[in-house]
Image (cartoon, rainbow, N blue to C red; front, top):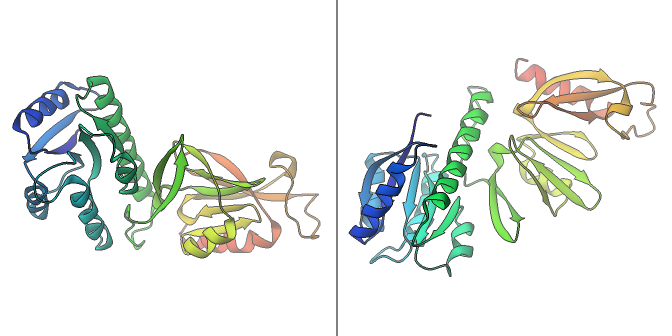
Length: 273
């Protein structure tokens, strides 16, 4: 990705001008302002015929406001159409919670500081890079996934939505579940059984404490169990030897219980690995 194609949406011309100047002054990551819109309706009309990576979006505008416009993008996601990421830029902090419920990457308050904007753009670039890496790993006939399919977690007191397509694995530890992506780990409440029921078509149960994205399994090998902690052998006598899978991007090994080895082999064979 050479630059972030950016659409600026704000009903105030001076606000758009200032934001454009800030965006174009940032060299890492590089951004290209491909269009501007004064209303949500104008932005929606532009997106029907064009594409972009990012929308810098005001909240309070005449007609369709920023929150309503962001909500309409979920329809594009449900239809399998590309959906730009959103960073809200507004004078009011009161809408932050609703913004993150709408999957915004960040929420900036005016007047926007250059350093704060740069941090938000870096997060957008990282999210898009991860998404591209995930798509590159999927088989050609894999179903298209969108950000409409996500896991909601609480990160430092705010809601965050992680696209399921970016999750490498879920691992149960004590009373919590660790969600792992290529760049981050999050601790969340919940049960693996519930996650398996909701997303079992994409994930493979490899152990009583772990679900792994099918596309993320790089290889299956026999390993000493002491490398991976206590295994669920179900009385099958796995103390002499055990199995583990290597996970892409993070190069981690996760234990595979003996009763799941055949299922993992079948999944790998089905992916042509």
